[in-house]
Image (tube, rainbow, N blue to C red; front, top):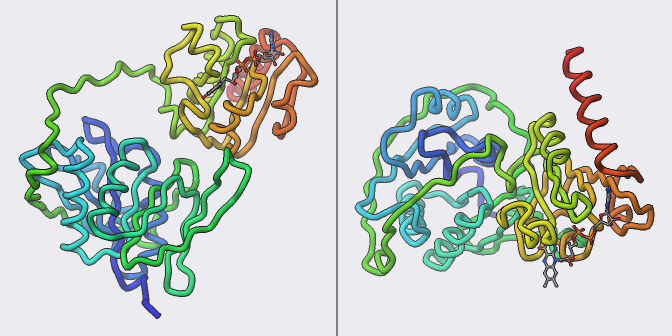
Length: 332
Ligand SMILES: Cc1cc2nc3c(=O)[nH]c(=O)nc-3n(C[C@H](O)[C@H](O)[C@H](O)COP(=O)(O)OP(=O)(O)OC[C@H]3O[C@@H](n4cnc5c(N)ncnc54)[C@H](O)[C@@H]3O)c2cc1C
């Protein structure tokens, strides 16, 4: 039986343009440290300069032993280029597992990497273990109504893990990661698309919807007034989401839409206000840890899946909840 813990684990270290780690990266590094045995956790760093010193310290605390700074004469934001870079790192490190955060862009890179290397790929995983010499990933499917376990039978596993799936933990002993430059020879095929321009969306100051621990969602019941939803999200340090009705009405941007034709979220806490819980919406939130619903209609379908429900007017309930949370916070 193959001893997978004898092989290093490769982790894509997503970060902001200024070099700050994106929050779910800490989760997959924790997962990698637990799976790598003594073989080490190798991080792939795709960015203009070196990782900042404080990031290296943090990565070392989490158990990253090596950071490979990818250097390419093509844009590593393009999934074809990134997939080739990760493929060459797999060859260089002998990794048997590549972990990525399950974002839209990373899933595309994961698929390309798997096709190029013959790897087995699992996306939207919420857990990963080694069983009988194979990596076995868990994930929910069919709008969160089924839990599945997928064993990777190929020699290389590529697994994209959903945010909020792993509790971040420091490694048993911190290390000082070695920073290694890794030049990437990009193929002509990966150059078929060139990035002409990138403009970062202005930050709302709130966490990213796809990876936030808390998401507060407004539906038609808000009648376009998201102030109570935003206030509660801010008290909880959460992101603001919406139903398709709310985005179609133009009350909030389409990137806030959660559901079958929007973003899939699985925060630790989902709060739906004025949201009926239609099947197309559930498809994007049913895997959330705790579901709270505030709806004036006691027969609204969302109460069927809610862990905690309040029958009431959101414009009364949400400000009360926000005020009480503020009071509790001020008491320390
Ligand atoms: C192909 C297809 C894809 C779709 N994809 C998506 C998707 O990705 N995401 C998505 O969300 N939808 C999607 N939809 C639409 C989906 O079917 C529902 O129409 C939508 O989710 C309903 O949004 P809602 O809950 O805001 O509105 P409604 O269903 O109208 O519910 C509004 C709720 O607010 C409550 N309410 C009203 N006033 C208050 C108040 N003051 N306080 C408290 N509660 C109040 C009402 O009791 C009601 O339950 C899709 C539809 C189709 C056909």
